[in-house]
Image (cartoon, rainbow, N blue to C red; front, side, top):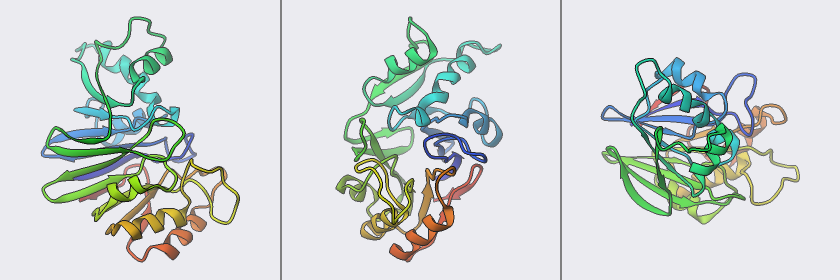
Length: 247
């Protein structure tokens, strides 16, 4: 597998990064996980306008889905289009949420073929995908991808929970959010701190930790990395748009 980061800013686009979007490639198949604000730009820069063969949306907060709305224009009105419906795996309510954001009363069946997510394991292209509900205020799924004996886990947005540890168990790469700073009072059941991300990676036995979803405007990358490193002894780094990782 190959992971390419298209967007990694938490909650709203930062000065250097769009919101969450991650492209995973295996055997020529490309799965886009989340499609957050601004990431349509980096999709074109680092992969190609029509790169995705399927999309998985972990939850329906704006910073993880809004460019799936803009992408309707790309597929519906392309000079060489329209393109056939693209498979989209998403929580319940996704068709209505995206159509409402676009202002499309007729829906998006011509653009997307929706499949409702629920906890379990299923194939998407050559990938074996496992999703489970994690600890976030709306229906949210962490993701485990397996291919040829390799494992990539993506936390999505979550506070600490057992489901996250199961998904990340023995992962070769653990792409984990670290939105909050340690040492301050944070809202409960919403996001992880750097220390909590490091603790999850250690408990799960993950071999590499990639930190994402930092909120640049009121966070501290150095503090987050220091806190994570205090709880996790393996290799770790903060991801950037355009960064790629072979798994």
